Length: 528
Image: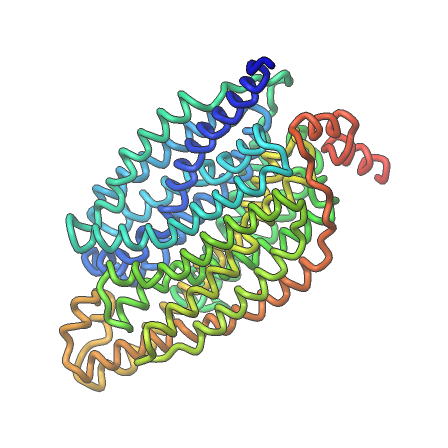
């Protein structure tokens, strides 16, 4: 007859919800910064006269995130999530301040890179911290909501960017992060539990971190500069390719002997991890390759202002938000998840194909319908792939596994944004340099083109510029689309492992040695 028994459970649920609210804010910070500049970008590069560096504004942030994700994940497992989250928020806020006061493209790009150094921790640690308090069986609905936060930011970012650009100015796309960063910092301090770790002092894998950063940076630089700033067969690009290969080999060798490897090679002995790694890389290419430059296209070719360009992205956000939450609820209710990322890959490919067919003069409904399909595809699989990885390893290394999964998604995303940006910029510059001189206008003027400037051009020049943007970007989506079918084929072989119902069960399995890092390392040692 007593009512006291349910109290601890109610208190636990309330605590989880408060922690989750703080982590949602952290995720929102990281995801907003990947999209908020998309609608402001044409105005920014026009005002700073830096259209030839447009790709770097997006790539610098993605690169900073990518190289730090495994570091945050591994150190978070060893030192606790809270202190590293606070560090990440601080770095992110400092980077926002640098971007807000930038007077040239170099300073702006530096600010974006510092933002990325913090953003890597925001993205990884917010997902890994969920695994500390929510069991795998219930985690689907929480991961679905986190995915919805990313979907929300995919349209809220462009909308905010457009509103700031047309209102108080594009610099507010950076200033807005300062109060949000302060709120997130206080929320983490107040709500996230302090680490209670009974582990030996962590041995930081400095060599592995350095080699990972070198190899990843060289890879992204090669993708960004190749075919644009330098020819693909130039000494610079070939040299970066050599550095990438040598750095990757050296990294693998270093991880084989490291006591606390930043990315344990034992992760790659799990089939689901390998399969989902391929899936998230391709998802990253499709997602970031399209998100980074579609708002610019909408302003330049469709002729809408920055705010309306953001509004036209709403169908993509709606598709991601609805499917991400719905799929998360379905996984928590049924425990079944294998088919969702497979279907997501196919639908994402269909969305990319629809985008590739868009031409000048097409109805906005066609564009928005294509974006809806793309959003549905991304929402079906994005967070489920992370859940699959987390469910494949022990709680002891869930942060490391989550970070590795996000790392490879960001590698794909950074490569996708860099490759699309490089090809897009190269094709655009070449077309404008060829077409504009024939009408008596120097092609060099394309570096300072803004949406307003394009709208005020004489009709003949306007048609040339609009056509150049369409022909430079839209065919690229057709080239990316077949990769999603490869992803679907690979994910077909994912093994659907039962989702654990409690955190205690996960820790019990860990103590028994199921999929623990130590067991995998011991097996590896026996084989050698």
